[in-house]
Image 1: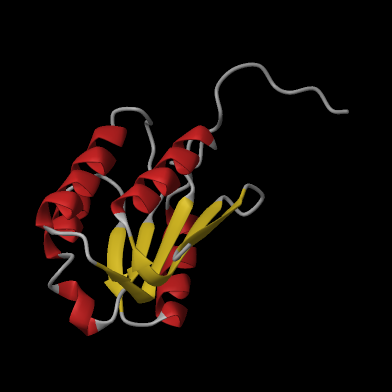
Image 2: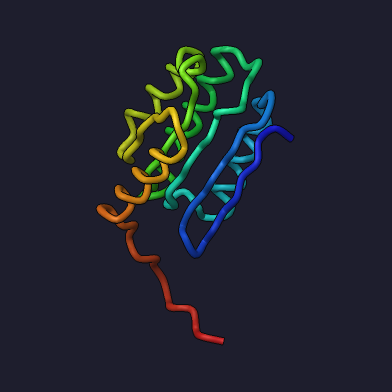
Amino acid sequence: MPLHWTIDSRLRLFAAVCDGDVALEEVHRMIDVAVASNALGYRKIFDGTHGDTRMGPIDILAIGVRMRALEKEAEFHGPLAVILPEDKHLILTRLLGILAASKRPLRVFGDADRARKWLDSVSHRRAPPEPRGSPVPAL
């Protein structure tokens, strides 16, 4: 599978890495997991450095539309750092434009180190709201 992700609840970090040809179904599966894991408020880093896709503009637009629709499901969306090589910017311009219109901080980078530094700095400036409901008793 060319799309891999890790969810770290202690660090409140969702990290995705592309390694090969990513299909639309894989992206939807990743989004499903983020929603089911209550990770929409986590900081997110998406590394597309070694990824590729045969998705067309309609598929990429569908991803953007779904991600924008998710904004209604969660009050807070964590910042998103996207790492892309220059040759991938054109193919993902529409998706990045849709995501940029959201209320969350978003930046696109050419290298992972700068993306991680930015993600760490922005997450300290804007913390997610405290969880609602009754506190969970200690075991």
